[in-house]
Amino acid sequence: MTEKQKNFFAAVLMLCLLFTGSAGLGYLLTEIETGNYNLSEKQIAAVDVKPIEPEQPRTFRWREQYALCALYELDCKAKPMDVDQSVEQQIKQFTLHELAEVYPLPEWNVQAEQNNITITHNLDGLCSVHHHMYHLGSSENDQYVAVYYGPSAVGSAAGAFLVTDVPLNRLNAEQMNALYAGEYEYHSQDDLIAMLDNFSEL
Image 1 (tube, one colour):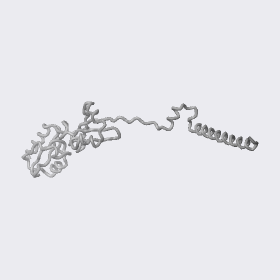
Image 2: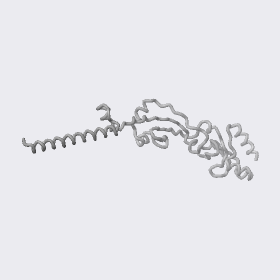
Image 3: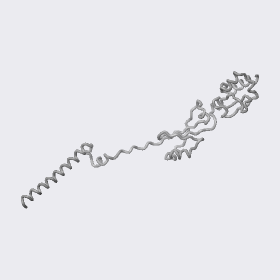
Image 4: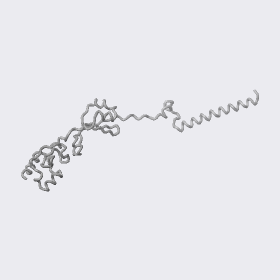
């Protein structure tokens, strides 16, 4: 081998060593910068994998309320309702649309806030407290004083308890204004009867 050939091979070998050294140094610097230096192979493989957040479990809140109390925003709150856990197991994977089909309006109401689901059972009429209230109003034909269930806020929605034989035109202006303003409310039949006795004497 001539001297010229020896020099050529020596130059090629130097270039190869220089390239390999540069690549190794670059890799080492990159590993140090990204914090992977001295990590195990398993740890290095997991560095670029974003940790998966566990899915938040769905929680259910069951309530029952009386439709007219809720509609007229009376001062009573929905009560907790006991539901078997097996029911929740059956519906925990349901979409909101599927839940709304299983628990349809107006008997039910389904509301969601993130993974918190509130299912409300709407019962007819008034709660036991407001159902035992009474108020005075006018009959359907606006001719007589009538007694309706519930506070005056619900008007005739809860139904009539009694239509009296007291004509509206027998009331004076002050009584008429009080009647239409819903001021004649009673929490017991005794108070109601006492007031009706006063009206019957007009």
